[in-house]
Image 1 (tube, rainbow, N blue to C red):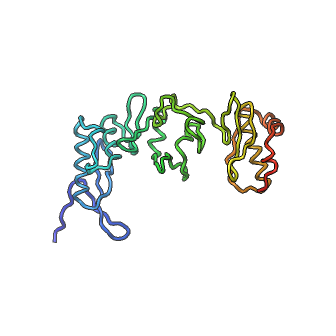
Image 2 (cartoon, rainbow, N blue to C red):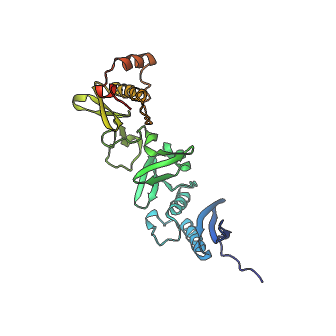
Image 3 (cartoon, rainbow, N blue to C red):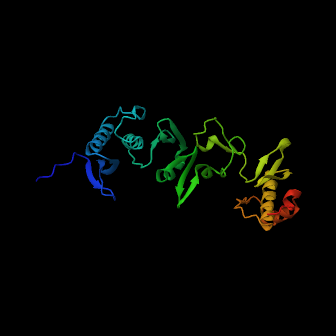
Length: 263
């Protein structure tokens, strides 16, 4: 019995559990592009036809996407960027004038400088619980660390978006207010240091953020010696020499609550 021919752009496959599925793909400007996997040959073929249509019609736009489309939205972005900018990028990036947009969804669009294009072409941005992160060298890294913003930093306290747009990661729009762990700005230009044990412990108030950061590091060492097993992030300080750091470390006072802490 002669086997029926699969529709154009459709390739049958079998999952590990033995169930069949269908891959959809097309070739454009000698580039083979996978469009996704589908439960039926008809769904895969519809995705192929939509992909061909997008590439053939210059008036198709990102804004034209609907949930009824047989194509995944990420693939929609990838194809339009390839069509309009003549560069294939596997992540949902669309290149604009001196910047590019990264589409997490039709309604959530991040903005980046062109200097970041190579990195985000190879690193997919994921979101979970409102947090943005990438997978890098096997670890999940928060997106903010790429811009000198430490983990668990608070917007408005440790950093701010100059134009008020929290999706605009262009460097001119990001201002780091505090890059140290355990440091918070206080009144009259001073800085508070605190450490989280079973609740927050006040370490002290200091003239500069650097002094508060060193006092925080000193407190981490004290509570560890007292038996605390918590995995603290300490401050890496490169603004001063090792000798200057040591002098500050021994000179700066910390609160009695830290000195008397019992792990």
